[in-house]
Length: 213
Image (cartoon, rainbow, N blue to C red):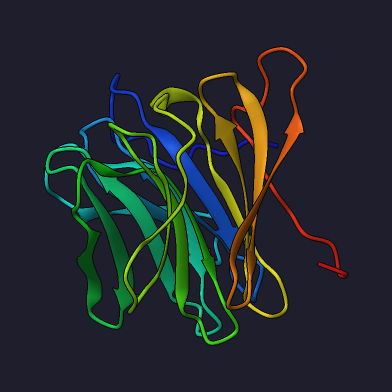
């Protein structure tokens, strides 16, 4: 079955979407609207979708990633293309708040967001010009994980947290087009492995961890 989530954009394209389910199984979707803004939609009990603009600035909301906290409130990481910033939108009782998390360089392309057991956001993302893979825990400074080279349209970084809230990230090494995998080690930095070198591979990755991490 298919449903129309947002029909208000006319002929304008809506893309770069991210979906998450809350504890009741209700779907929530963050997306870059055809008007160039970060938007958010959720489905009500009657099956009708409602959508809202989260960040009304222009050219904001590309490559969003949505996560639902244990309180059923939504968090969205996304790229502010107009200013070149990584931003985070947090749902509150009165609407949304938006915060710039990283503004060094042209940062925030291809975000991947995960919440730890305390609902603290962890975000993996790229710096557009150098291609740096960066990782940030809200409340701390960004880390440079790897320098895989610039190729912004094929990254699709994917982040997952294990039971110890340590990060695992799959991503593209841009120069030889290989699939890479970075794992965070407690107190010792990162371990990086190249998983696939057969041809041009590693773009548009999606990562999940099993029960053993």
